[in-house]
Image 1: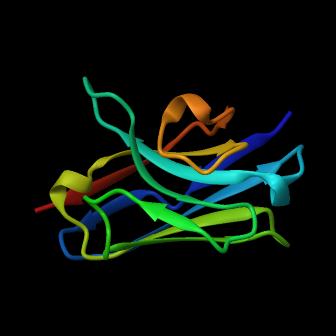
Image 2 (image 1 turned 90 degrees about the vertical axis):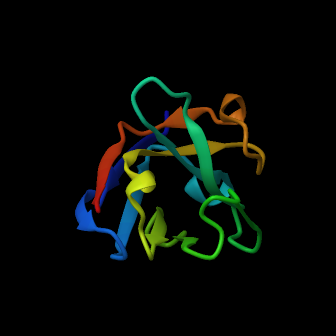
Length: 122
């Protein structure tokens, strides 16, 4: 059973940066594709970024492209989300997820963390 734990969220001013981390345990992390998603109250969880098990392939949502970088360290069983030039509309709870294929759809991700809150003030 894979367990995921996010950290690094917080309050930041617009234009600032945050780096989210997601630590995995209980499974073979290096075989999993990893994704970051976010959710605000009343809305569906939306895709942010994903990275392949090797780290060689990445995909991003258009809304964050150029401002966000996903990376992973398989030796540390950790995936990161570096977010720059943050905007108030980036405010959400951010979740990491693990799954067998590199896709944007939530239904293909098997394991989910509990989330970390990001608040961007204007």
